[in-house]
Length: 493
Ligand code: NAD
Image (tube, rainbow, N blue to C red; front, side, top):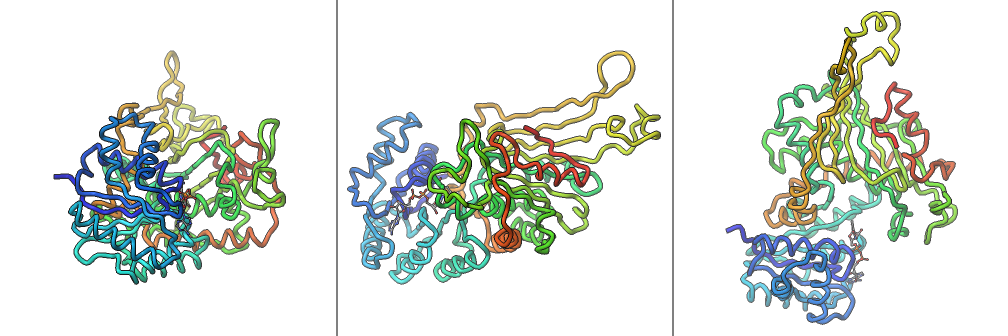
């Protein structure tokens, strides 16, 4: 049977993440039969809710799924609410009793999943009490799921990790990076290692440069206080972008297993060229959005200080110093209030050395117009999910000119809607004990060390903000970054 057996304890059970993502994802696992009779959920938070009220909240969080009301009621009956201040030791005694009771009632075999859907400053306290009050079992599995942000620099991440590892082993810790739950991010490995044409070309002999863009259209919105202390570099680059870079650059794992993939990702991250402080401005660009008639500038947003120097945009150039990638720049960019909301990866191949169709021009002068277009493989991560390949073909008609054409594959809307959402997929992985699509501590550590150098330089130098227009693709310096190398962004607004 595919049924999984576990007790979930969700710390922060009244929160936004729990209601928007976790309850719907658990319900989908229930609908698909991964969760059936043998599961229960304890939601804990400070508010004094009753179980009845909790069940109403669960039903409300599922409203958009238009599910059978009887199934919703049945599902919600597995949920128990416990009002609990995580800093109060006494509450863990109650939690332990409730856990034991539910374990017996639902036949949960000691399997426990703790989801810390709360601010990270509570992780240490929770982990410590779970151990001291002996809430971890000895007969089943114990796994803990934590959310980003994992620290705000290497030192704080290490401290957080030390707190967690005092209770849990590394193989019991599931650090969520929801990008790793996305269909097209998982597809990076499928296309690389499932197609001889790509793996054969996946190196500095054939690839000119790689571009990773995570673009957001909205401004800072409701996460203002958190975001202002973080910025785009820490919020997006340290985790999502570094993970994407490691999947793009890693060597082939021996087997497609958690351990073998982690080994290769860490090798890739360790091969990233570390920047000296004085090299930061030439390789990383930061930005902050200005105002338009329609929208406020970042510094005028609610809860943002009027002299904030937080980066709402970052672009950078990363080099990977190994045989495969030497000389190939990896350009990255992410930001708020950009032209559109999308995530894409462009693999730009080298152009043919000679243009035989326009041979004379090529010999006379190597100007842009007489050269063939580069092939570009685009991985569309979202909202479109698919691949695009730009090629040169013969222009239809008399004579012989070439013209760029596109091969296009997009998942159809049915597969997209059938495909599990990131959180559903990741919760399923945790139930299976599979941490392949989670970040491991050594990956976190290397990513922070890389990002810390840039952040430190930025903290010590005052930027000229604001420096980009809402609806653009960031400051012009982000274009100059590529132009200096003779490249340009494939996606332009
Ligand atoms: P939230 O503020 O909506 O919820 C926080 C929860 O913690 C609430 O249930 C609150 O009652 C509870 N809580 C706070 N202090 C408590 C205490 N002392 N004792 C017991 N309970 C307490 O936050 P959220 O948006 O759900 O985010 C939770 C975590 O997930 C954060 O670490 C956040 O960074 C991360 N995260 C959230 C999202 C998202 O989409 N919401 C996305 C990525 C990461």
